[in-house]
Length: 274
Image (cartoon, rainbow, N blue to C red; front, side):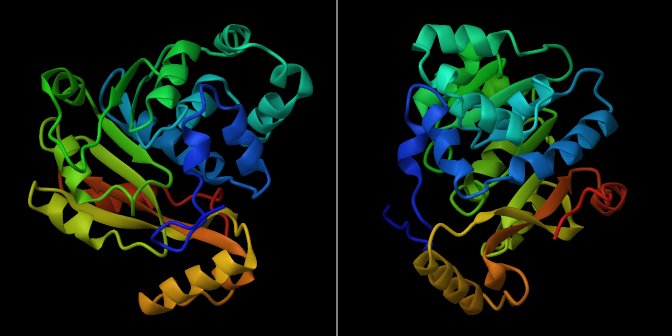
């Protein structure tokens, strides 16, 4: 597979299929796990939010994986087993959608998804993982009136791997209306500082949650070597982490009311993994 501009293997091809079977089949092989590690943190943020029925926007949601984990009461291993099951792989598109819809438990909260992949969003909506979808490139364009109306409903913004490709341009466009809480899992090779500084101009405070989180294994020795070079150039020590074969992320929370540090402290739980 080709490499992207950051030195990582490009998985672009698995985000444009009409359903998630290629996505899960490919990422299972590299132990992709960050949505599972994020799940209890997002659940706690949803519970802590004062909105009676919070609306959660997942930035870079692809097939609505984070929403599916919550709404299907599933784990990543459950989803891997489901989408790689030979019987499920043999289903036609309509039958797969119907099978997935039966797994969904709707209710609190609402889930919106923002992504540049129309097929992934369409599937997530059809399967009931998402309530609304925003097919947009907010790195380049302002939201249109319909998209802005949806963004104005958002109480909590989350992501599990898009920061570094998505920048402060997108997150400022998301934040400037409703001023939602934010929680982003960010690979250590990327700095969250430009986002924190831009959000501060809108009155946000940002804090990091202690610990690091495994995202996935390196797909090859070449990928690992390139990422270690990127980390070194950024002044990030990979010893005992990326040097041992896994990509790692940190969790940052941003709030517009000046209490991000308290929220970060409240999220320090035993679920953290090194």
